Amino acid sequence: MKSAKELNYTLHHLCIYDDKPRDNMWPFLRWHHGVTNFFSGAVFHVTDEGHSDYTFMGCGGRAYQIQIEAPPFQFKYEQQWYKDHGNAYNHICWITSDARASYEQLLANGAELVMDFEEFPTYNGFVAKDPEGHWIEIMEYTDDTFRVQEFTHAPSGECGLEMIGNVEICEDVNTMVKWYQEVMDLRVLKEYREGENAVIYMTDKHYDPKERNTLFVFSNARTEEDKAGYLRHGPHISAILYQARDVQRAYEDGLWAGMESISAPEVDPLTGALTAQLREPCGNAITLREAFVPA
Image (cartoon, rainbow, N blue to C red):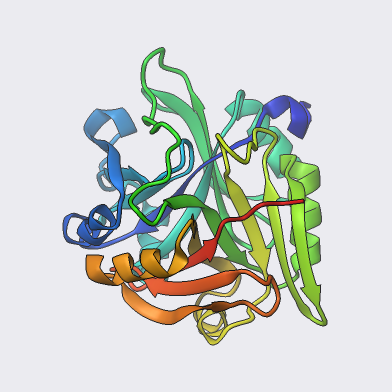
């Protein structure tokens, strides 16, 4: 069996389930984002269960993106998840060098299968749950030219906005950190702890603070927003994570673009970072913070 290091896991995108993708993408586009790809049809192996409608968008960073996916979705298990949770953040996708070997390695280390391994026209992949139930999609590109496009790394707009990752709410932060370190080869960049509260910034082996600032953050439910989300979904993806050179300006630009305010910029007492929260058109949270510069 291949090890996590040999499988070369790379953070790729966060998927949003959204019943009005063409309407709800506009606030993102107005908020310094760009479309990297639209995908539909045979590229994603449409079945008689449903169909695919994918829009990929990026902002500032080179690698990490969001994928907006619309119902009725390709597969029955996706349709059931949407009935249970509605418009929400659904999964994190990882690129690997060997999806078949990843399938064997993840299931041998406590992951629960959601969608069996399958060879699609342009990639191989499967979907699993981590030990707390967060969905993990694994993709291995198999076509010579098919790729989700990437932007040049360049902070966007006058505020210097960059999408840098996601935040996941956990039942047991320490257990999840250990599992992702051992099973998916993540490493800890920064830990913030006080009493029962913990926020842990992690990343994959390709992290570069200037060219590939892609993060994976674990937290307990500290805010009222997080606690309400935990009551509805249990452990879940709670926010897209952005940083900005000018947080106040980025926050104001977001409001102008059509986002709603959850909390205005203020210093997070745990991380010490100037932080704000916005609500994107589907109703999910966005966390906006000052530049993350690990020691």
